Image 1 (tube, each protein chain N blue to C red):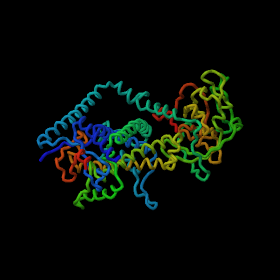
Image 2: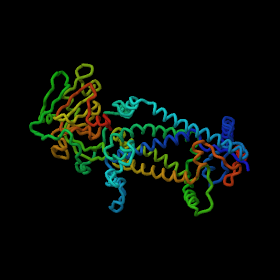
Image 3: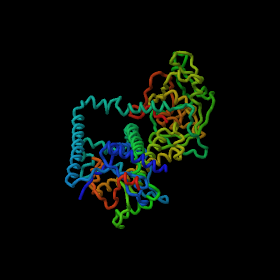
Image 4: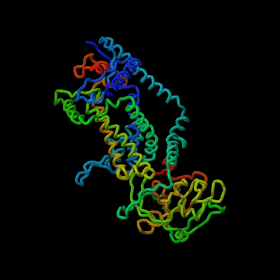
Length: 255
Length: 311
């Protein structure tokens, strides 16, 4: 059996993907520090509060006694301050309004690169993707045997990866409309006003966290070779693929 | 016809790419059920090789990447260890640390876009929300509203401070506005304010100018001293404002809130109200206003908050 090396991910995409990881982490962490100054969101159904993101006991957690010691006593000195939860708004804002530049610039370059290089062909869904994406999920869940045909990514991935870019833009735009609601009042109005912009900004963050959890789960399921290709850019593939038999571009032109 | 030409150009591009990178460019076979072929996605494949060769080349590439990641991490750790405590303090602890410098950078970006004519949205009276009170610094002592005076410093043509009363303030044109009050903590309320536009106040109590020329408050505001320092009578709370924000038509010296005279906890008898900045800058119970050329100190900025805090 002959093998091929397939170039999966261009160098630029790999850099921006991995740079985005610590940047988004910092944005979420500093966002939580800001959120703790006025943590109001939860999930309510018919007037009942089902869930609050940081319930009151969470803020008391560093005071809970475990066999004569409190949680901070178990932590190394550098981690000690992490348990000091409230009153970190200034620190959160400093970090948020520093890393926002890097996050937005990295995202912007990524979008431009994706358009210019033609990489968008790998991640954009088409209307019929909505039909195939559930089949992908059913196949992944071992309910349906056959796998819908795909390129580098399947249709569920296309929808997810395009959504997460749109979410990123949404975070930047709602963020700007909370940050400068007077100068960018048209933007704030577009999101339904200051309070709604903050609400959307918050839920987009929750969506990022959910995306991250699913993404990491899928990467683990896909295995080492898939993970390695996001670092080296390459993967080994069979010379003849059962799923998608490659046709040389030259031949295609003569068809 | 034109589609064939497009294809030829595409093939030409593909060949050029292949020459440049040594990859073979393949397309996914035509399949209306495959998004990859609908969008014309390409694959970049090497020439066929034996399993051993493929493995060998792949591990060579892997080794290179993982070694460079390891080396970079090591360099990072060594670099961090070799930084002196002074450098670390400068970066992360000092007054001029990177993150606080970023606040100033953001401020200048903000100021670049700030248009004094741009107004914040106003709301109909039925959208006014209950008052939410926060922040009691500088309000600890009892206030005798009847005996209250306001000291004004940095006035054009004067060396000494001027002391004025509520009656003087009330002589100035009254302005009402219903605007959003935004706390830096993240909540907001809608408040019906009444008072005097700061710009109307400055038109009568004229600030000094940078050039030394007589002030032209309406015509040449950029020549006025660039900052305003304000504090409570006990000077326990103090804020600094930039001139463009304080001269904004929606920045008021407010004496009424939701149709009633200001209550002591909301800043009686006179406070700043403005949708141009967070609540921390809208000082309650004014005691002193000073026009100044130096960037004034600011209570919350000393705790690491953004001095500008502007919207």
